[in-house]
Length: 143
Image (cartoon, rainbow, N blue to C red; front, side, top):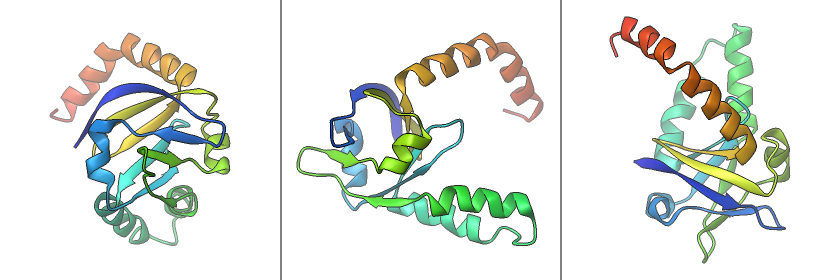
């Protein structure tokens, strides 16, 4: 599982160091794709297969299903860790997530998210200020 929040820098070639704690779980490769809220998602191959199977089984006749599958699948790219534990973030994904120099790598159990550090700061502030409301709504769902 991926847990924790780390700040890293993109290098001039668009590579980012994966936190040491996460590397072992990605030794067989990983998939990077567009995420939600203008971040990027990284999945290990096993988790990606689970998600991809769910995406391709969505009803083709529903426009929201097609749109979400396109967002996730068409934007996906295989990545491998280099000898220094870095992955190359493709240009189109850096543009999508508006990644600049400093990024946040956040572990969310079955996936990693990559955020521009300013966007992450703004998102966290907004979410933390609404934490009571969010908790109440999740309570209604039994969480």
